[in-house]
Image (cartoon, rainbow over all chains, first blue to last red; front, side, top):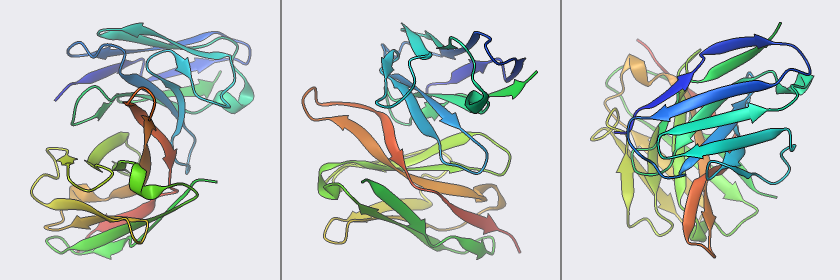
Length: 107
Length: 124
């Protein structure tokens, strides 16, 4: 199975900060990667698909980049509603695998 | 609007079986592959299984292969997960999710809709 290594596992940031989360695949996955946001007690929500495509309805402050093995999720200006846990997911081959998650907390 | 509603969770003893259901509405269920994803308490997400739109293809995580069976009834717009030989480590919230499939490009892009989850607790 493809391993997804996500970093950092947590970070503290202030409203307005630029935040970057990375995900590395154990082998090339072209651009078959998505980013999900999960708030406590809620189901995950798709933010970015195909590494860099913004899902409908998601604010433009979220962006994704990368291909092959290295991927990045960027939040350009952190808003109060963005404090959550973020996961990457490779959908290149089964079994699909998630990164370990990054918890974004208020500084 | 797309809705996915899981049910069937509860407390079950180790070694026993349980069947989860996911009722779908708001879209043509028979055109989409469907997935199960789980999340142990306080832990990250783990993909569990997928079934193709017509039930002909199924894939599983290694951790559940041989113990869990995914199935669907397109006449009832319902997805199932039959879980057997349950272990303490299967304790989790189980989510069903719709495959994000683009019919024009014929590519899949993860999961675009999720249910609210159902909690399975394996304990004696």
